[in-house]
Amino acid sequence: MISEKDIMYVADLAKIKLDAAEVKKFTSDLNDIVEYAAMLKEVDVAGVEPMYSPNLDEGTPEREDVVGASLTQSEALAASKYIDRGHFRVPKIIEGQ
Amino acid sequence: MDNILGLTLAELSALLERKELSSRELIAFYIDRIERFDGKLLAYLYKDAESALKRAEQIDDRRAKGEKLPRSAGLPCALKDLIVTSDMPTTCASKMLEGFISPFDATAAKNMREAGYISLGKLNMDQYAMGSSGESSYFQKTVNPWDYSRVPGGSSSGSASAVAARLTPVAISSDTGGSIRQPAGFCGVTGLKPTYGRVSRFGVVSYASSLDQLGPITNSVEDAAFVMDVLGLNDPMDSTSAPSKTDFYANLQRAGDSLKGVRLGLPEGHLSDLAPGLKAAVENALKDCEKLGAEIVNVDFPLAAKGLPVYQMIANAEAASNLAKYDGVKYGHRANIAELEEMYSITRREGFGPEVKKRIILGTYILLEGQYEEYYRRAMRIRRLIRKDYDAAFKKCDLIVGPVSAGVAFRFGDKTISAMEMYLNDLFTVLLNLNGSCGITVPCGFGEDNLPVGLQFQGDMFAEDALLRAAHIYQQSTDWHKRIPALLENGVER
Image 1: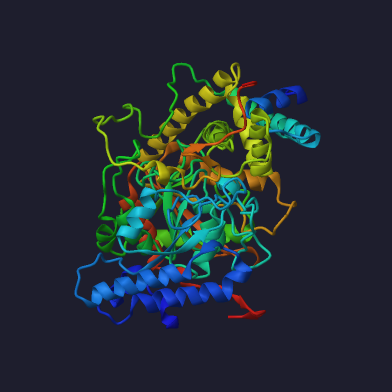
Image 2 (image 1 turned 90 degrees about the vertical axis):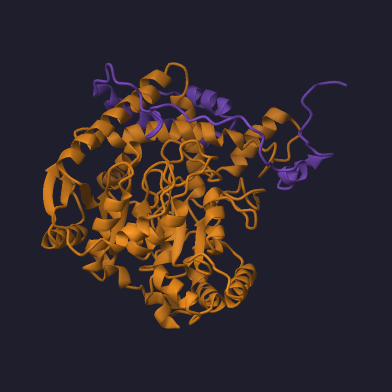
């Protein structure tokens, strides 16, 4: 059983602030889903390798590490609303001066 | 001009090349339809008539000067709003990305543009492609052109609705668990989910990276093949991208008109628990395939019932990871909060809709130490067993055939749909994404309340040629794909 405390813990990890009603609803929803997923335990998976991707069983292809064309700083930052002197401005992180 | 609606992309291309039709006229024709009908359909999230007409004029000028242009130069298209574009916003139908304009183009968008396609705009969808009715869009609810009180399906709600209403001849969409095939079925259009790796995912906002795949929604299989020649290019920016393939359309031209020698596998149980009207349409379609020479054989997917929970575990775990980047720091919505940790969690509270939040919470839970092995890794193992079931099925048949949904398009907010029906809806589509191979929905008649019914063909990995061939031969023997819904203009049906 997933408890409301579990949901609050997970929501904190996922950095989503939930209100009490959402905690209640998601607790109920997740319990339904996880209960339903319990049927997966019936499947014998001994010795079966996980299939993480449909076409990468051979591994991820690699290429030569060469520098190619890329966005300029101003292009990369153009879509942001929080730019200050060429940087992303965020709320203060370190306390004090 | 109204006969434009009856023409394939190849026929339109020929008219443009012979200068019997200008691109400006063609684009203006579609813009006019969007202006007349989209106010009620709400398929488009963003449209830019002025830029589209300007590009059309440029192409007409180049053609007038005798320049050799790609065969698709001057044809219209539209993009699902998760394909990033530097000339239009990309929002994923979310508040989080409201107004966001990407500094670069997705490879699919770039390939379409370089082939001369002119984008009419960006199409509505379920928020972050999470949903199967279109109702989770932050901005608007696209309606089904066949019945405005019904959903168009999802997540490619705007794409399927726009193509059915002929507000674009082609929409580039995405399919993670059925998001191309199911709405195509609900709206009576053709929807192709290519093999994973066939179309580059670079610049496509990720939902579940090991399941997502782009593909076209069109009015015919022929048009789907025509567009695939442009979409099927290898992309070094996507490490899962397959080698280039550009002969989909040429191969389809040699399809012939017989399904003799084609074995169509019907999965055990796929004709039970269907809405009766839909079932009758699918059964008729199967008979039509037999008349065309196909042999129907039974195939079995012993793990089919496990497909949905496997899909839920994998898709949500991947979604939780993919959506971690929306923290308010760089792009998109940021809550006006002075404390950093709180800024993150309020930004995500405000920026994501309820369905997105639920899936992130579920995915994060599955990835917790202790749950990871039990749910996520176990699901990935069962996924391999499902692949083995597909491999076994494709020894007995060339393609798998069956319904794409258990019922026709449902009403907005309908709570009366049985849990079994919703479950079957997913059952018919998610297994294919887990396997990674290709599938297509084609319209095959009308069911309950005279709403469209889709027939789904599924093929093996990279077997698009065989898939498109069979779907095309079936489609050419019918006229379902030529039916156009009556649209409302100022309250009058057109």
